Image 1 (tube, rainbow, N blue to C red):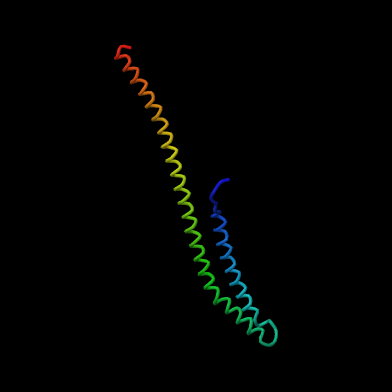
Image 2: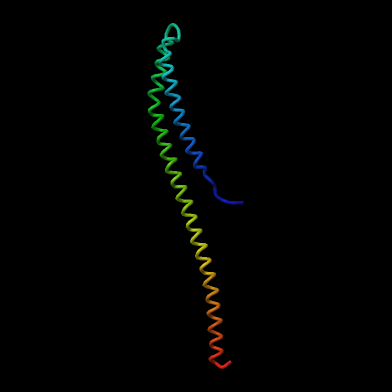
Length: 126
């Protein structure tokens, strides 16, 4: 079983887009409610609709600020995940290159040792 976890950064970005679309829908609903407030019937319904629309508009600025903060955090997380992944890949590549180089050096050392032994035998007369 493999350890660790995976992060679907594309999905995170999509969720931020969905939050922004939701904020746009709230703005459109507030506009529609404000525009329809005269046609809601007698009494205080029109005033109540205007009050709700105004409250939604007031809260929408704060909502958009929070969505922007979330989007910023998601961008930073995506960048961090990418940096960690790249760092891991770089370390693995270096480890493999080092291992291959060590194996090649071991073969060369063994060959050099064999040649040195043969040369020593020849010079010793044997």
